[in-house]
Length: 531
Image 1 (tube, rainbow, N blue to C red):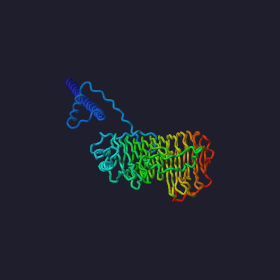
Image 2 (image 1 turned 60 degrees about the vertical axis):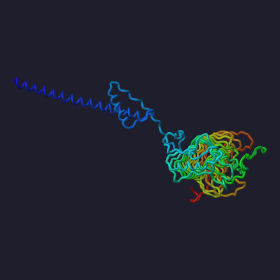
Image 3 (image 1 turned 135 degrees about the vertical axis):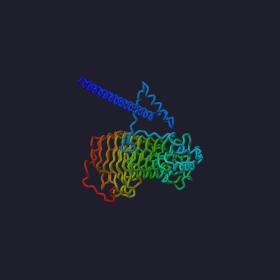
Image 4 (image 1 turned 180 degrees about the horizontal axis):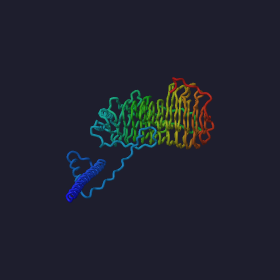
């Protein structure tokens, strides 16, 4: 009996010892695993903080591995370093290039250190003199030819130099994409007629490029006064509506110190043609012979933080001219010129303009459209948060008799006016000649909204002159507050002809001439004429 008890006790003791042994091994393994996890996680957070730090460059080669070994031995000490606080990276605006965004971040030009030496092409290295006297055209052509071969290259026009450059074309289609034209100096146009031959349509031209940026703090000076005096007297289609008191307003052509025998064809200062992904920022364009900045057959265009500057009496000097161009964003820009601050021509759609200052000039215009019985199509245009001062017109749509097509989906919102002669204009009888032939067909105008148009006028607050056969329809007015300021002109009440729509709020002055609703009959365009 005693022997059985002894064997039983021995068995129980042996089982307990085995249980203790198994438990101790399991505990050690768990502790070891916890230690490995702790070291791994702690090292990962340290590596992440190192990679986000901009103060210390990353190490390479053997030194990189030794630093990790040192970090691991350091983590095994009794007092490890606290985990660094990671800075939250700034949020990226995914809508930056969309023409429907109202607030956009300012785009910073790429800094030179971020480029390889093989990507930078300074015109001074290609023989440019920069004295404003000797012709630097060939040096610019050579620098471009080199930059054109390298993707994401930068052609530099350095500050504190003045470059005399004749007519020049920076063209593709064999250029690499994403070239930056960094303009920090001054480019001036020749003023002798010999440099222009029989006349050219543009001075500086960028053609058939993918991803082209013109940026910097430099100046493009067209020195155009030699051309301006050839266009006097300059007639805008709305000039006939402005009647001075006692002939007190006179137009005198500016006096030019240059060659008076300039060609009759006047060049645009800076033109982009057939290009996608175009950006213009920071620069100043001044005194162009004709239009200052033109986009023709382009897409994905951004213009911001730039300046156009020419006298208010310089003829046909549009600030920005859009033609057959889509998906356009223009903002944070100051425009002073002798014609439309922004002109939107046929073939334009998805254009968004905001935070622009205009004046002097002829306001922001859609048109003129349909000249010589042509078809014109313009749609989805937004103009908002704009200030205008001392302009002839404010927001305007102008079409010729005899044209076909349509203007639709237009919004003019939050326009501040100061002493504007004709703040709101739709003119389907536009004519910049002495007389024009009466015709029945017209570019149809529909879906135009005017909201929060406020300020002062000096001639007439509203002028709606629409076609008998194609009346203006769906014209919406709300929060219109326009007060008269007597200056040098006869003043008139609001005028409407064949204009239909809605008064969504009371207006100042009352615009009782607008016909509420839709016309009883409206001529229908043929399939060929519809956009």
